[in-house]
Amino acid sequence: MLPGQTEFFLLDLHPAVTVHNGVPHKHRELFRSVPTRCFFKDDLYTLTFDRGTTDEMERWFFGKIDSMGHAAVSHIADFQGVTNSVTQGAEKSGMDAFRDLPAYMGAQRFRVPRGLDDIKTRAAWQDDRHKNKVLAALASLFQSYTTMWMEGVWEIVRARQSATKFIVTDDPVTLYCKLVFKSEWTYPKDVDLRQIGSRTIFPLGLDSCLILTHLQLVRNPWSTPTENRENARSYEQTMMPIGNIQFGRELEECEVLRINHIIKTRATRYIAAAQKEWLYPEKYIPPTEWKNLDDDWFLLPNPWKVPFTTGIMAGGDGWAWAADEYGRHPGNPRYEDKKMRERDGMMRERAKQEWAKKRVGKSLAHIDKFWHDDIQDKIMNDYLRSEGLLPKAEQLTS
Image (tube, rainbow, N blue to C red; front, side, top):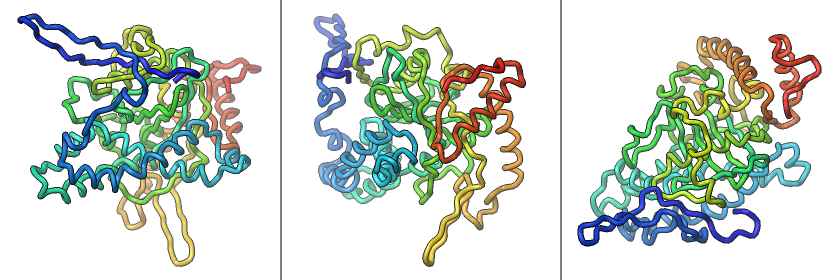
């Protein structure tokens, strides 16, 4: 919320209707509410499961997540690169934050009515005799997205220069795929994160938001969005290079509004904002089809700053671990697939050029200065000048 503010503006997207003497009366849709009452429901778990299952869920899956998640969100919202974290003596807390955040996002995804109903639908249990089945299903689904999130391209965008700030909803983790439309969202089903075009949008605060994009889409934005990404899978040990996380890009007002429009559209019932007008982003953006909201690639991270790596190798005293950029291990028949890499390399170069043309004059993200962040900006500027899109003395905004 804004400094000094104690209440949110809360919007009910589907207010109840009471019939009195044959006349329907729609309940009011706009409220003022303190944060602890905005997204609150008595016996949330018990309404879906039995009491014994509820206690076990809180004990094993959600009880320890909150404190870790709060610290992780705070750290990542202000992330300025690994080098700065080391300089400020926050290296360990930074490593912990990027380990803890995906688990916290998993909790935020499944700890809401839609998520719990999704778990119940998938597990299809009937009574208390199936408590272990419930917990096994939750154990699997709770972290089912963490591997793909860790293997994605991370960008932390800002809204510090925008009058409009980010909103929050009863579905805090928003999935957006431009070819999955509202008519296809049969509650409690959601967009499938395994699909190449599925982006994850997770506001970290008033003016900070995390956007996660599959590497395959960054390398080839023309991929079919609804096809499954390469080696899409549930929880498995993986690694991520924190130095490549993008940060510092300032969104324009229309871009913040479009993110809020996506977040609102994907909410189940309630959204909250620090100011009333932020609850209605659709009023302030031009009429745009769902599939065209990202035509200018504003949700796409800077492909010039996504290294074209083959993967990660690590080892120590008696152990070794290796995976290519899509999480395939040695022994997998497609490990470091040469044909795929050649195709990826060709499409990546096209994507870099097209992205530069679409985003010329816009704010640029940074990566850790250890990875020569400024050199990538210079190479892109040189390309734009060669295309006549930048005067010799002009630079893209940093």
